[in-house]
Image 1 (tube, rainbow, N blue to C red):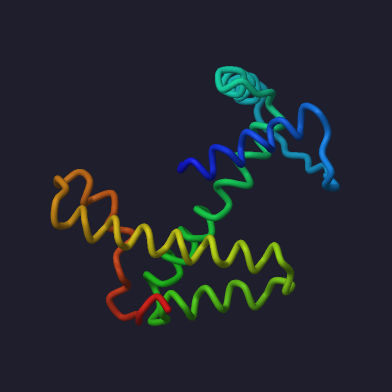
Image 2 (image 1 turned 90 degrees about the horizontal axis):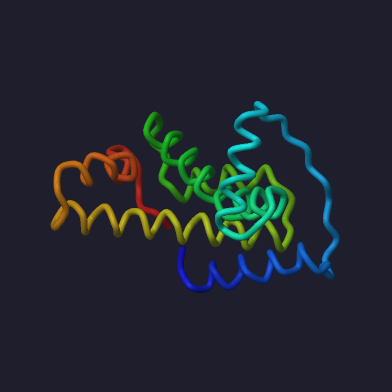
Length: 144
C-alpha cells in the first residue's frame, strides 16, 4: 500500500464515520460467526469498524483478484495479458469505474512483472517461488 492508498483509505474511513457525498449501496455477505468476530477484532486494531474495513478490503483488493484471474487464464491459453484484460473488460459496462479499474489492473500487472524481474535478479529462492505465478506466459504476448 502506498501513501496515496493510505490517504484514500483514511478519507473513506472518515466518510463512513461522518457521512459521505456519494451514494452507498448495501451489500450482504455471509461469514462464519467466529470469522466475522475475528474481522471485528482486525478492524478494531486498525481503528475501524467491520463495515468500513470490509468495504476498504473489497475496494482495494478486487484489483488483485482480477489480476490473479488474468494470470490464471493466461497460464492455460496462448493469449497475451492485453487480450485477457480486453476480454474481461469487454463484458463490463463502459463506465468511469470500469475505466479506472482497468487502469489499476494494468498498473498492477506491470508492477508485478517488474517485481518478478527484479526478484529473479536479486531475490532468494523463496521470493522467486512466490513470484513465479506472475511470470510472462510462455506462449503469450506482451502486456500492451
